[in-house]
Length: 275
Image (cartoon, rainbow, N blue to C red; front, side, top):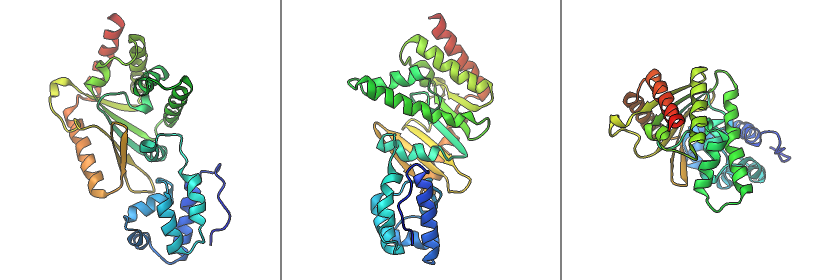
């Protein structure tokens, strides 16, 4: 039986997931069998074990009872659940850090992984106009820290589809937009990311309901994330993930080619420079 508490400094979710796998196998249960008792999918158990998903207290309580682990998972799920991100986005941000491929559709804003500090600060201030500078500083720092994923030259693959509103809507000052678009252009030209733009001339399209994020992993089933105003949900249901992937495929079909999209983004940056 698992014994002492986990060290929170040692990737708590990954350690907790490893302990879950050991306890489940010791109990002679498959992922599907444990999932059936928890009324979740087998893929959800796989994501818990791989550290892709956080374990919440209600699941920890049930797992302790089913696997007879003496309260181990209840004691440790708190450390594994701690996050520096807002509650509605925490699970998605943590999964994003483990993904092999990320496909983002951005209807209004440059995706967080691609934002500059000035752009992120303008967005955070717009969301929270009365927050203290300390709060805004923390939000900006946390958002920018996600971009460390792009330090690797090829992994994860990041493919983004922008609505044209993303590059036409001025966030902050003209200088902020010039810097933000030049940053995206640099990443495109260095072959680190793929970007397509859906022009206004395309008319209605499959992404008009809001943001979509798709994530694929080496050792866990794919996930999708959808977000609204201050709300968000991570999905592991295969049918839902497949529907979101179809939406994304339809968006790429409505968008300009990567070459044409780069030309539009560069033109927008010049427009801001010459305004």
